[in-house]
Length: 81
Image (cartoon, rainbow, N blue to C red; front, side, top):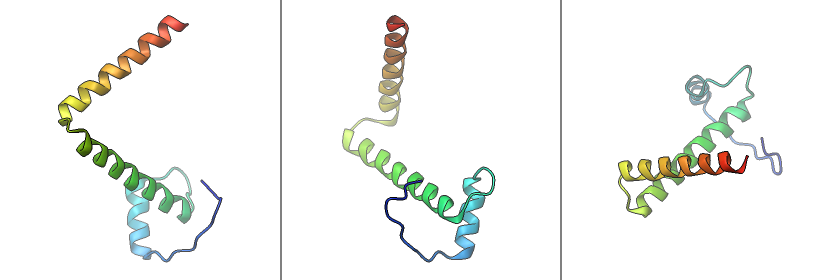
């Protein structure tokens, strides 16, 4: 967890409990960790959706490109070893 700057926020206890249940954090995660993980998930998801919208690719085409890149990376690793 990044600790460069600490901010205090008020979060509804019920919302925090629901988030904790939905995220299923391992062990006894601190409230701050649950909130940070939820924010990273949300903003990561938004970034992905935004980049997909900007690319003009359909979901199927984006998946095809991702799979092609994954296989190319794996081939490079095998030949480099």
